[in-house]
Image (tube, rainbow, N blue to C red; front, side, top):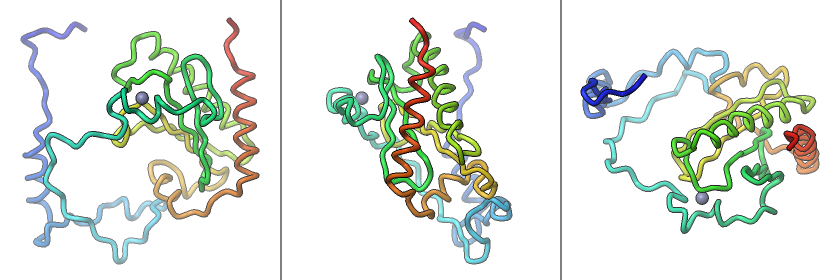
Length: 207
Ligand SMILES: [Zn+2]
């Protein structure tokens, strides 16, 4: 569909959103804890929980880290900081981690919306390759893929492995659980990373 110049432009009315939320909040400015606290996967018990009052929006937003290619730490990082690289992509696996965590990014200083069609297509294939490589590790029940983009201006995607059978960690709450679990022993993590790298090498497209 071609976007027409006269087409109505949708917009998110942020001041109205904040005003609505504050009007719905209690007299102390805090919204009631929602039904998510009753999910069996939610890491915290409802008793004693309370929400923070909403801050005023900060506009314009403060710059993210590595917003500028000239000073970007990801662009400057040498390949030996990564566990796997090719001509376009680099995968990091820094420990210690409480759950297997991989970070995929392009060599080029781009964010998600900057990708041209070729790089976008490659990203799709890379996401599938990394997912398969991590999912193939014994003990991994599911691989979660995240792109938030709020902290750093150089595109990076997270791959988190949910341990097999740990269904209490299903879905969006797993990153919260990860903050409350002890680190995987270094030798176990190193061996997992080696397995992932071997799978990625084995899945390289023929040229
Ligand atoms: Zn960069």
